Length: 127
Length: 144
Image (cartoon, rainbow over all chains, first blue to last red; front, side, top):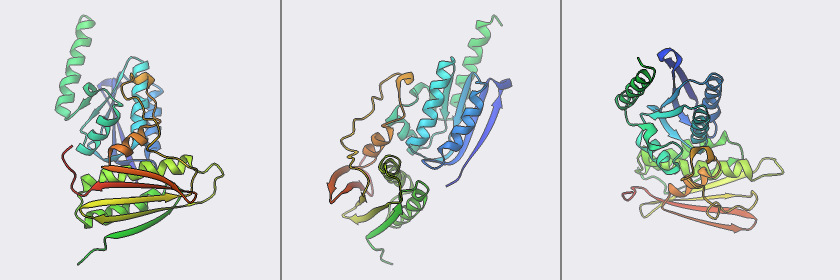
């Protein structure tokens, strides 16, 4: 099954959101991997995988997310996941590739987290 | 209309062949009462087993057949996957340590972990120069 990936930049480049659509499996994971590699050339503060339109992920797909989190963490950033369908959530629960605090059930939860992060940045910079 | 309770699939050791296998197996399972969400678990177990074989099982290269038989019996889906790849028991392979910090985690082994997690029972044997992997999964799973 083909995989489509839309990439969205927000907050002046501070966040990059990947919107994969379809199945992230042994045949399609490189499509997402290539998009992640492009973004990692100039890494943002956060990358977000919005999995609302992903109905299946195998270990190949998990590997892309895990590698993204490792790269982000090495640069002081994070990879977040949002909108996981139950079967996708179960996969990530089993492999524990991403800390639970970086997985959000809804955009609303994620927005609350992002707002708090922005508040901390403003207070930290004295603004 | 009565559906046959068994179906045989044949693919070659090529990753793109997994798509047709997944489509056919999905059709077989859903027609016999499995939900799409539950089928994702079945598809995952099969993909992890077969893709591992395709990637690592044939040092000499070449095209090789992989056979999968799906049987519904007493409310359970029974899958038998047979290949002539090098001997490998996915049930004996060490599982990754998922408690490691992310910088120490490796993608390797996650497929085996998922394979074992997605089925109720699994058995492996080496028979006649072939790997034979049997997977069993309830059509309507018990609560997890």
